[in-house]
Length: 428
Length: 130
Image 1: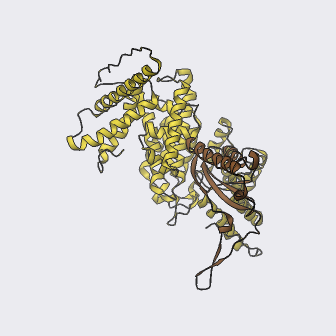
Image 2: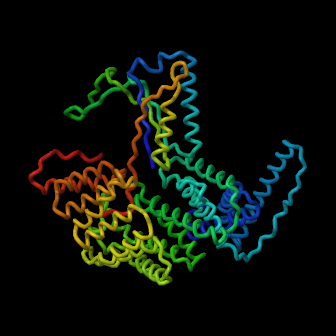
Image 3: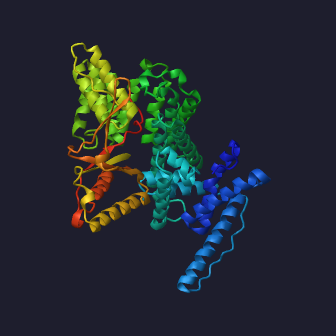
């Protein structure tokens, strides 16, 4: 789907319109999979017709009209097929209602669609793919590129996701207020995962991955616009902006990872930082604190420090104390231990790590070994720190991180002259 | 998360070539429908079958960088016969797929229970580092 090549405005416009058009068509015909196909056909028609004849005055209405016509054809064919098969006479009102130019439910439709795509019946990878396709308006090929899988595989994943939605019989409407909190949590989680997919792999096919982060921010912005009073949505948007602000400083010239403490902070995006801080400040003042808001607050404290040594660790420690009360996530305990080490010294941090050894969720996880290595190095126990760095390097599934960790072990090994054991070779 | 599933087979000369036609066809049929199943579940990234081990050469660079090839190695205990790369939500799912491949039918239709080596494919770093 490249509507008018080179015309960024038009492409942006289409991307905004996709969920609205899709929502309107699903609302009318109640068939997610067929509606999605019809909207894709309408977009193709637009990409052929608009550059030649100019865009219509009301592109949204135009697209709904064309997609609805395709749907009507589809329903007629289906009906004809069924008639032939069952010889049963069925009558359905096939007249398409007129398209009203003013539609107050545009935002709602986008939101409903997002709630559908992030349905609990789907696995995270399916929900992510479907959200990017149906709400984000990315093509199957673009999504496949971003996740480094063949297009056919991604097409299959999306089509199965649509079938699951259909089978689950979830109605096309906003969840009731009782369901709202749980369902919104699922939506935010999927958006968070999309952001992380894009943010974490800045090495490799760089452009596609960064596109995912931008897409996650764009979608979260639209959810925030629909429900501006919800502080957790604002918190998530702030967290994304405050994290994304550092992306230029995160990798070196050869794609190597640069940890937060060593980053060139002049490369941080101050526009994103100011917007993120304004959002999180407003959200926190509403008094309904949640995990995304607290994580955003931590990111804000980091972003506000002009140098690593200016970081307000006592404040970060206090925020992690709160997060610990709020969620039973072992990663929070891990980060809490780091903050405690920065405030009270490494032995306090190491003490807090100890109970995690018996936590099944973190046993054998490289992050625990990496943090322990770091704290042991701070404490001056270099020999054990080297062993922990190497253990973490063997356990991570990330090449840039494995390079970072093996390099840390090698550096420490060379500075600790009493050791002359061979250094295991790093990866290719 | 992506995993590679490496199928190791018995040594050269003991493998598939000596099987009865009926069993061979059942095995090939299983592998074909197994591949189709993975494509349709939206989990297959790629899959390749390799030539029989008696076609393998070991290559090393000589002093001037020219390739020196070394003959066939029938003494090896196990050989890589092929691999699948799958993109799945959990390691358990990768193990389940590997177990299905492991139980491919052999002589008389009995499951081969081949060993399938499953290893994560290196991927993206986690969100934030120290």
